[in-house]
Structures are given as C-alpha cells and as structure tokens.
Length: 143
Image 1 (cartoon, rainbow, N blue to C red):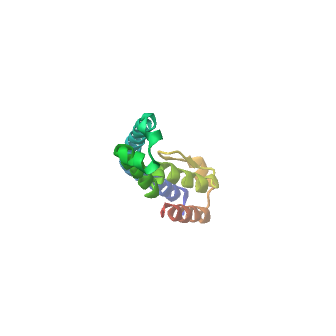
Image 2 (image 1 turned 60 degrees about the horizontal axis):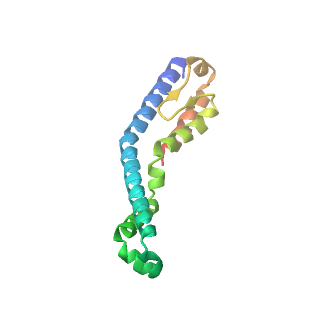
Image 3 (image 1 turned 90 degrees about the vertical axis):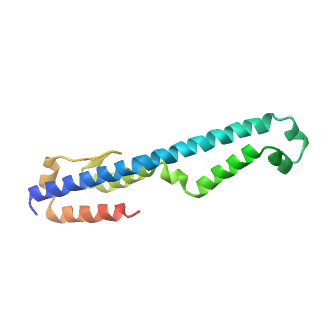
C-alpha cells in the first residue's frame, strides 16, 4: 500500500469518524436536556419537600405521599440513571477518547469533532501498521 492509498484511507476514516460523532450530537443534546429538566424538577420538588413544616411531623413515606411532584421526579431521575443516561450524555467524548488511545500509538490525535493527521506522519507508517491501525479502530467502534 503506497503513501497515497494510506492517505486516502486515513481521509475516509476521518470523514467516517466525523460523520459518526455528528450523528450522535442531536441525540446527545436531547438526553442532556432531559437530564437537566428532570434534575431541576427534582431539585425544585426537594426544596418544597424540605421547607414544608409537615415533613418533620409525619413519617417519611407520608411526607413523600404528600409531595407527589418530588416523588415522581426523584423516581424518574433514578430510573434514567439506571437506564444509562449518564453514558448517553457523554457518548461522543467516549468515542473520541477511545480513538485518541489508539491513535496515540501512531503519533496522531483526534478531538471530539475530527481526526487530525499530517501527510508527514503517513510517510513513515508502513503497510503493516496501517492495517493494524484500521483493525484496532474498527474494533473500538463496536460499542
């Protein structure tokens, strides 16, 4: 595999990585907004629950029964974390971190948006390393 073919492979990989991360951005934004809304609802409900004078006079479960907004938002927040929302809001960063780990071995880097490499780096990567790089990156994209 000559240097030109290696450059084309790397450019194709860069386009695919950029496309994949941009594809995740809308879904990640929606998950972040949902997490923010539920967190604010839980905090508001908790504040109302704590400042209620009846909370100190009745049992714990009765006070939760008297404040359904807090109870439902708290259960929803816990359910979202059990469903893995904490992973979904940072999915592009996880993928970029995995790519950075693999690419660091080849003196290349990537950020949350794209792969950065120079032709100078491609000149000293041999055909065996290019194949190895492709295999490792493809293995990392299987999440």
